[in-house]
Length: 119
Image (cartoon, rainbow, N blue to C red; front, side, top):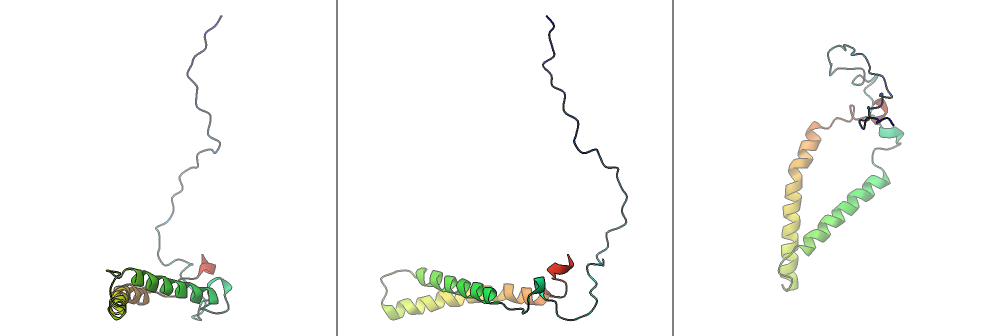
């Protein structure tokens, strides 16, 4: 009776190792940055920039913010005019907090380089 070893040898890799290829320096100005013309870029071949879906998403987001601002008023037993005043105060705080990110987005956004068709 022979005793076999309990050590299992690892299987050979399915993919052979690739030899290291020396690539050139990474250049930020690649072919993906050059557009043939300066015409407005339409994302994914859409016929217009603002679609019904994007308007619907913005509308639902706005309604959600308004609903959360309405629910955030405390205390709940306030008279109706005072409750509405605090609700509008909550909305103004939310919109003021959104101004800085919107300005930052507008400042750095360039639709010429945000084209999904050139990836």
